[in-house]
Image 1 (cartoon, rainbow, N blue to C red):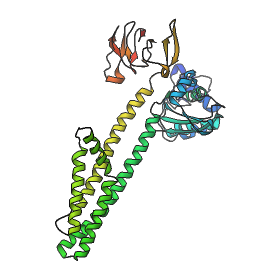
Image 2: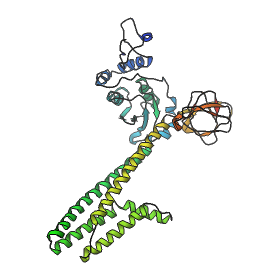
Image 3: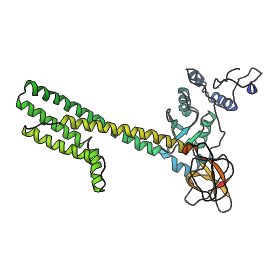
Image 4: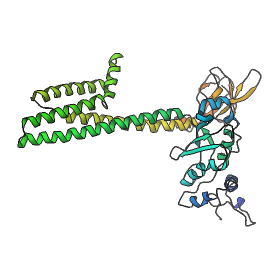
Length: 383
């Protein structure tokens, strides 16, 4: 069988062209091929030959009219200076470097699109555009024509907060590591002096310097534990930060007393190492939680953007962002539930695999609780 001119997969016999024209494995690849060539982006195919895995294109042909709704833009878009808007969209079908190149060429083919940046791992595109020159549905339709169906990404604001938190975590870890390293170097000098001898004034200088560096480690990178402990005590609910903060304060105070009096032992290197290792462990924990959170956000990004709401006379299409508590919505077979709710009319079966991992359909009827992200399988439902 001949290979598809877009994705490189074998062309089925019923799709093969006997006229010697371009061969495509499906109508989606044919549509995407002509859309790419019509936009002057033939270089996409040169990049795609560099070892990427063949994937057949998929287009939906949607009009994406809901993307131009005021409620939708108010929910997902962010205003920028000079009247620009920005939004983050989840793109299906992104799988290689040539996909990134193609998506990020959008400003060159659509006047009014100012900037596009695609995050390859998360398949999330950050798009900035001028609403006076082009509307968001036009941008979404062009991406769809390239084989990347578009969905609103709901985690944009959360991402900005998380990036700020990441910077703060890394700054604390960096400072704590630098201080711990320096205190350990000073501790090696003290240990060496303990066995080979050291002038008392030098020993005192090293102890005091170590104390000052330890105080700095406690009051800056270590203050996250102090704040956590203080909040816990105010709430009268003890948690892990309380013994950590107590150990840091007592250890630093006792070590400082010994450093200035020249008596006893000091363990500043242990205190600073504890701060560094605890911060590192907490950052690793946050990263693992972030991976799980990203998976949930991507799941919710695939829920529908429009639904049919009862307006008193009939069901009319509205953006999901416009739904309010108490609204009645209709969900037809093969559609995804747009929100959590209770069945108010009809009975059907739902595919809940996206939430529970269980592939067996679940029967629901009047009064049953249902959840966003599940798929209606057999009959219309009113929620």
